[in-house]
Image 1 (tube, rainbow over the protein chains, first blue to last red):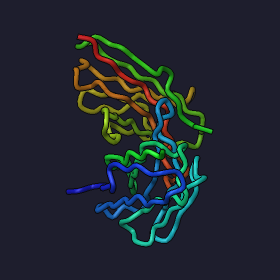
Image 2: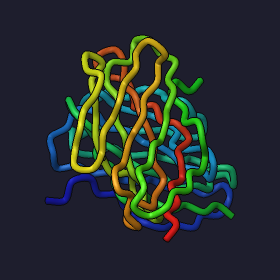
Image 3: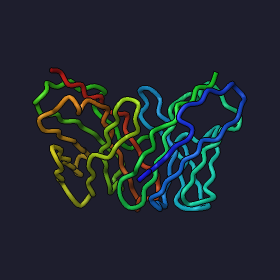
Amino acid sequence: NAGVTQTPKFRVLKTGQSMTLLCAQDMNHEYMYWYRQDPGMGLRLIHYSVGEGTTAKGEVPDGYNVSRLKKQNFLLGLESAAPSQTSVYFCASRWQGEAFFGQGTRLTVV
Amino acid sequence: GESVGLHLPTLSVQEGDNSIINCAYSNSASDYFIWYKQESGKGPQFIIDIRSNMDKRQGQRVTVLLNKTVKHLSLQIAATQPGDSAVYFCADISGGGADGLTFGKGTHLIIQP
């Protein structure tokens, strides 16, 4: 009964480094989303996917790339991390009802 | 821009009182609304949802009201308990649900003993 699992939970990067955040869901949901959450800003949509092999830009896509090669996985990539990307990242999945969220990844870029 | 927003960043209530958290949305095409609760250090958790063909929906100690005329959504929590302390977000989906959920900035509910 895992639901939505994000890895890693914490990460510290140096400016310019790259990394990939993994989101996995076991509910066979079509839609998957990546959000970032900053103090006082709520949740802002970075990218989303409406099915395997598809991706689309959200509200704040710059500096991020995504891939959905398998239905159950949605990857968020940072090619060259910047301090402005310090945030808590949440993945979510849904089909016809509410979205289910992972526990978040706290990323710090120094 | 953002299609949903909450009126107050912080709401303080006495334990045992009822809490009302408000949300305004601007997208007339929104047809599905969800309230989430986020406790410190955790991901958002589903509380209750409502579709645009309804005006009211009740759950356990929670009620969501939808006023499509003024594009307003509210979450009522009865007999507020210490465990209700969290940030509450409203979110909406439009156009069949393929787009991302759009969230408001959240209201931090503080429970006073």
